[in-house]
Image (cartoon, rainbow, N blue to C red):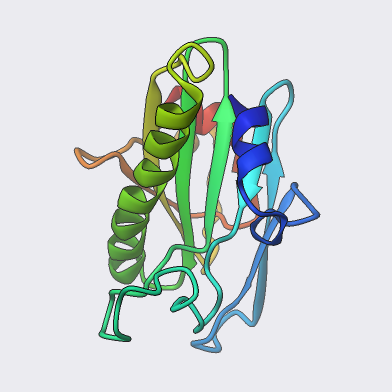
Length: 175
């Protein structure tokens, strides 16, 4: 399924480096943030549709009203034997606005997967799709392994990660 997604998404939305998510903290608290993507056997496809203030190209049918051109920082597609996972990821200092942006991105990601499924057919795009919303805080907190085991998605499939240095694909697929 990832091969199909990669084939149909324009190259400009697929970062050359598929192992790093990086953003500049516009609030000025953290400066440049980067989060390495840790995966072992998982196949992934990282996309960044956020055009940093120029999302009118992505959503040409909306006026620049508050929120209508919003997009989360990254969409990470990951696949295992059973499912296609779509991680909607926003790196932010405040998770309130991150939750809103990943919620908006959920609709956009559904459009992408629904459109591909329609065109390619269910035989070529057969796995169930699970969407996961992730807010990665830009202020790092130290966590022990036991504290990581307590992480859980809320009822909206939203999770706040307290450590923006690493994104463990398998761990967040299994939560």
